[in-house]
Image (cartoon, rainbow, N blue to C red; front, side):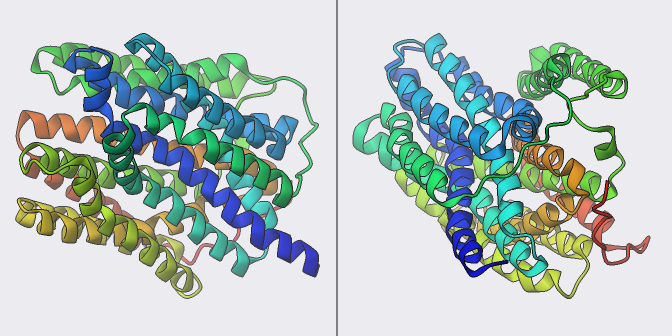
Length: 452
């Protein structure tokens, strides 16, 4: 790598990580504003659920489509389009005068984020091709994504209390404009894949349909009168997912290359990404509801309590980098998930005070810092020909973990107690930790063959 290329890469990596941060923060910053949004738009309390899940559904459902668009038309071009689109539609969201208008804006906002994040990850891998540089870049990327979720609670709280709920959306306009300019100045182009000319529209529709049905089904569990509806939606999601798989096998130019399904690294990385976010995002949401509801803390105070999570995510990500050079990727992920399990158990014991919640979520943050770097490192260690699809699939796993995990565990807590929700999260993290780090022995992951 030339000195000029290395210097440009050093500038590009922070820009790409900031794009990831802003897009992911869009989920939780708006969550903090929900009470004010409902009052401002004269919307019923039942509208809180759609406000949370609409963004996540379109974000998670279109990530693979975003990755394929980058492969086809150029990752930097699609990323710039996504960043600018995210900023513009955020302004429109802040101007919404009714709930339907805001839900449409949130849907488009999620779609814009979906085409941005996988392209940003693909470009990150392009500017940091060497193993040591890639580990550092992935550590920064994972820290940005994981910290964004908790930071959104703080940012959202400050904006709502200072300037009202529209500010949660308007803030994205200057951020997006600055990031788009920085992107064009610092991030190099990556030649698009010119093989094939068509995108699999039907495959994309089936994928987002499966995601929507699954999230809606998980969210319906909370209402005891909707158990039949929840089961119906989840079964429908499974059937649509099967149809999506069949489409991928038969399409001449499938949305996801069949080779992606054969990659052990990608399968394991995606599973780990799903569990990472499912067992931490849900716990943070439960803690936030408890802090603001039961302890009656302000949105800002509750957000500051969650800062221990964000800070220790950064610590965990930094620790993961040297660990990955000495320990197998699976075992680093297993160690992180074990710490996440301990954090959730600590919430069961000490989650009745703000201090106890801060310490417990700090443990969970340390764990996801370790586990997310390992999962991303594993899931992106794939042949070059599927690298674009891999970035979309990996991020889809993480976003589905956030959407489904939060919907299901918050619903379980509503039917029982927060402690039961945290116990379920701890069991999920601990079980996956045992799978990742305990025999049957998994040798140190070697980079998968990179030739077509």
